[in-house]
Image (cartoon, rainbow, N blue to C red; front, side):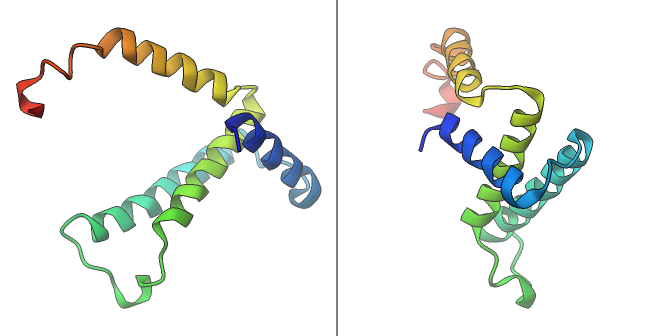
Length: 108
């Protein structure tokens, strides 16, 4: 699935099952919440914290998908073509950092 197809699929789902998009501000708050849930799993799986007994069923992939879902909703609401934006962002980073990381002794 392309990013453009994902945006179209989320839009179709919202129209069919979600009635309408939540407001942009509400979706921004939900995105923040979802990133926090992802951070909790990362801190426990890869960091120094341990899982609570009630957190054993948390799924890293599901939380990443939740973050992506809400980001796509925000993009759809604000008219952002995420595929185009990502391509432009990769080009920007390449032009800006093409030698920066390769020449960073901290990364060797």
